[in-house]
Image 1 (cartoon, rainbow, N blue to C red):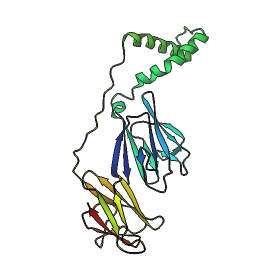
Image 2: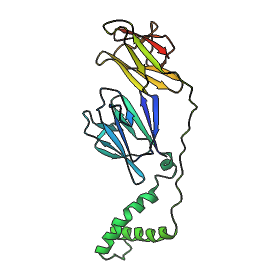
Image 3: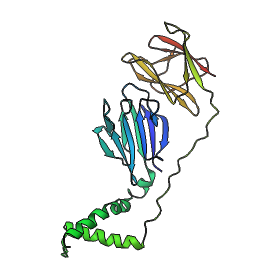
Length: 253
């Protein structure tokens, strides 16, 4: 089965199996894939299944949708394609296609009905030259063969499921400023904190704990008085985070 892998600056955040006809992506919480970032529109893009293929379609987003660093409106996804939303990346993985050479046999079958209608409108060219008529003849011959020799069952991809820890739900409490005492429950896969244009970080909930990762700003977030650096930093109960001049304490309920 095909899947999507979400990452931020080479840090894996989450993954989803493509087991629906349509998967929505955007900043609103009701999307199938929720990316809580100001660079992402409320409903930014969608992954749409057509036959055995998947397309990414931009939904009129403000900043557009990029695939492999190129802006697209609609794009047929190939194994390994990178869909980009600001600094976030979603990788399309379809190991079944990679293993069987892209399943060209099934793609040819999808084109055959149109080819047959075209064949009914004009006589076949029986010459042996490699023109479009001889190609149509080959497709019709393939179709008759396929009728008695069905395509083999595609290889089923079973994603590896890692055992999850019984992780307590985390929260942060603001320690200074006008919002002192305010608490925020970290029950989402991604929670973005900070001030855009100054300093922004994201806290991710993973099976093995909570992690804070730098997103924007010249200075990295601080935890217990020390810099987190550019990589994801594991949080522990009662860690004190300093971000954009605001101090927050991290708790595990």
